[in-house]
Image (cartoon, rainbow, N blue to C red; front, side, top):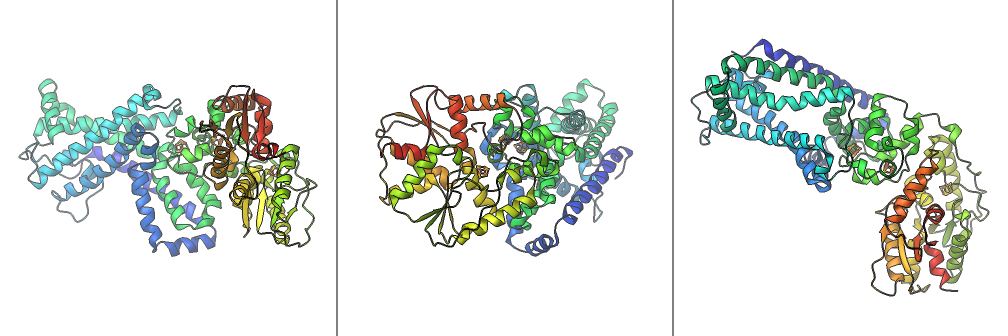
Length: 593
Ligand code: SF4
Ligand code: SF4
Ligand code: SF4
């Protein structure tokens, strides 16, 4: 016998799922620009494919990044993904032992124990091929069930997993979750009751089958349990494309696009849509998002932001409230480009009315062949002490420089990009780019981390882009300026826009370390100060809360000076912290007077 009516719910669900997933993949491919499609076809036969497959195994099945974040969570996700995948692979191999057909119908390996009882194989027999498969299939089922137990613990309290927050699901997600959770216990019971009636089964299903059949009418129960198992699979497959479980196929597509699409893929609609679907709603980002943890807008965290995006709901508030600090992106185990995704969502909204007051294009600079072109940025112009100190550093070091925005009239274009006005931003960028290159300088010096990031990511300048923290460190190493030795108590705030892993952030830490005349450790915060231009939301009380949380994490003493390297952080922290706040340039020059 190789067919029974109960296989229909599973089969219908599977066919439906395949149609929807193939259609989504086709849609993402069709939407790609022709140049990227060409690149994609070209890379399929290159090493990129090997790298992509390895990443799919590493992150989609083994969940390496998640393991590094949180072992318990990593094990839970791995047991579901790897365990289920191996059950399918091994089940298919096992079914070849009993089938005369060249190609088995897809349901046959899934419900093999209904069709084949093979009662002469002993439960713990490992020396024969059928015995080995019985053992391994039961072992894999146990592996998946161990993940299910952890998932139940996580639902009852995320603190078991060291998480402060866990994601909340909508009704459809809950139905899909319930059907997923039922699949494996129902499989266990269906196989156990069958083993109890007809023999067969491995160490787990055979033993449980004996116990169950001694207490219950197994001959009446085994068949309804196969129906229930098939039904839970069918429901899960039909709901999968409309729930967070779409992340299972989408993560594969996301990894393939990343490896096959070349550098420009990250700016395409397909990549954003696919990234949005690749979110597993694991909840890791919830604990990293300060707006969610310390502010009044928990749904700003990517887990909820993406849930709303997927549902196609108006997400204006939570799209705007994000600080674009990137902490969630660094933590996301799926590696989704969350900052760009937020910017893309902003582009979809009509935010033109929100445009910050951006100054005009610069006048074209005369070619002067200076060594350094200095772009202070409009925010730095609001902190005159920083301007004064940087100017003094440049003069003291004897470097030939040109100050491009001496009259404070240039914007780097970031506010336009953040509000979704990409075309205007590109015009501004092109105009600035020309003015910078016309100076003939070898180095572009910036003081605002926002400008620094903008120049690095969007300008494609073929000159060195240096933040002043890095610049000062280089001058000190070359003995062009002297660093002071300080006795006062210091704390360090790393501006989030400086990008925690950039050379500038590393230079800032090194520089501050060199300022101390003793080995005392300097408390450091990498939290966002809350004043980020990234947030377009109007929620000043949140800024206060975020800033206080960032300040508290390093110092609460009035006699501690907080050092930073961003005009915006300086102004925000200064307003909310007890002690003074100074830019690194000020500190360096203050003691030189
Ligand atoms: S965005 Fe990343 S970290 Fe956040 S829930 Fe989704 S997959 Fe998890
Ligand atoms: S970028 Fe920062 S503020 Fe925005 S969601 Fe991520 S962690 Fe939260
Ligand atoms: S990004 Fe820099 S130049 Fe542009 S508005 Fe902000 S501080 Fe001013």
